[in-house]
Image (tube, rainbow, N blue to C red; front, side, top):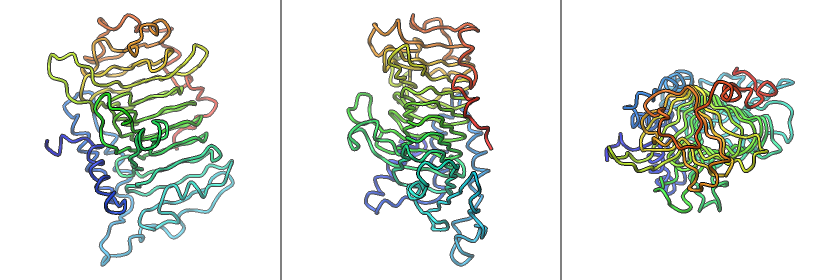
Length: 397
């Protein structure tokens, strides 16, 4: 296999395995992260529905912001930091600084989280410099109002390699786990670099991030893994301009979430021409009753990559997912959706499509329970009112 054919999680898995023998030291170099992400993106470059402008805009904003990897003869690693950074606290905001090279008060993200005051009403911005932060991070419920500010999702990454087996359950395998309310992440990647499982492997699920707090927002972030990449667990969440990669159920949970202008990339194994094999699924929503107001809405997104995948499968009997104004490549199976091989769920799940385009958007052979939504049916899923955004979502600043 050529290097270009290897996906980002597999490349990181190789380096992660090496790191286990070198005291968990991964290259702390934003160009290293960019190189691996570029290779991952090139894997899917043949799809007209996958583009990479977000990557390069993110790099323009972050990769060259600080020249932290100078030779010792040309100056200190920390010379580019202004003497007054981070700035002092205000009545509404505190800023903590994380840098792997020791140019800030913290070298680990978790250490900065631990320093945040319990139940603080101020927003704490944890500014995370370019680099790979190989650690498991947990934001407990009693630490709301935290922002992770990276320097571009192609240059700042939090990475770990737990699986369902190693962490005693899929729900606990997340490299980052967010239980607090009002969490924000900007321009940063969350990665699980556990070995890529084959379909059906037991205990190999590996979550990059679990989002279990209400009112969370992600702007320009990357989510990298394979099976169960993004555990969109519970609460109301917003994802904008994000890159989400995986193979099996790679967005799953029982949250009520709005995904806008995001790239959803399957890394399932390529399927031979003419084969009807299904080897992946984008979503696995977990609504358990009609009384739950949860579901996933994908608006103005793109779906591409490799394999042949379902838009969603019914992890729970009232699963609810809608794709609208979204470009669907030919990796989408003609039937579109799956009831988790339980026909009793066909009357209770809600799977809808509205004004999508591309070769995967042909609904003529969809499963009978999939709905081609009319204007009225689609209207509640088409904007951020779906997640009550007027009550909590702040504009990007």
